[in-house]
Amino acid sequence: MTGSTLLSTHELKARYGDFQALYGIDFNIAEGEVVALIGANGAGKSTLLKSIMGLLRVAPDMVRLDDRPVGGSQPHRMVSHGVAIVPEGRRLFSGMSVVDNLRVALDHAVPRQGELWTIERIFALFPILKEKQAAPVQSLSGGQQQMVAIGRALLNQPRLLLCDEISLGLAPKVVREIYQSIPSISKNGTAIVLVEQDVGLARSASDRLYCMLEGRVTLTGRSADVSRETIGEAYFGASHAVA
Ligand SMILES: Nc1ncnc2c1ncn2[C@@H]1O[C@H](COP(=O)(O)OP(=O)(O)O)[C@@H](O)[C@H]1O
Ligand SMILES: [Mg+2]
Image (tube, rainbow, N blue to C red; front, top):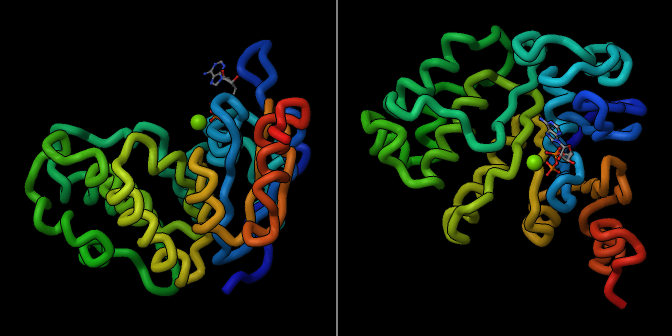
């Protein structure tokens, strides 16, 4: 079930030097909600996640958590506020074992109330990781590495989990396996943002979706309600929409 607003962005603008990547993004997510963020390559999806996570500088009021300004906080502060990211490209310690990659996150875990994620719970979520726990991460398949990356983020005990294209480059069967874990993650009230290029997958896995195009939100709505045509226009721009 979803609750009150957990995190919101307000007229969020972000730049890389002279290049403006985001032009005033209004985004929000409630406790326990799964929100998909779709859009073509270069739309600004990763930039929005990085801005929320404190990996890009933004003004304090542009990001609010529990209605308090947190924009521009350092990433480790955002982790202690309960925001974790599964970054693009996973960024694991590839020479280290599965369990050691997970332990690293435990070392940085923040005290939190409620049911906490443990390594055992990660193994219950992704049983293959238990079998491979002693293996170096680099010997795992791409899908299994993605599971380690998700597990590591969960061990930060997030209230909000930001996932950047976790299905990218994976076989459909593995993608299904990973997406099947989403409901068990959100059922404890953890909110999840899914950046996803596969629109069908994004829709079926989420409560609501946002579509971005060239640094702006072009569509937002309940995932079950928005039509394919509407998404097509928002995704490519009205001028490119297929009749
Ligand atoms: N480090 C960077 N330096 C300069 N421009 C960047 C950088 N990262 C992304 N961009 C640009 O910002 C825009 C949005 O990128 P990004 O957020 O990565 O899009 P998406 O994740 O939707 O594919 C793109 O035009 C991209 O080229
Ligand atoms: Mg991206």
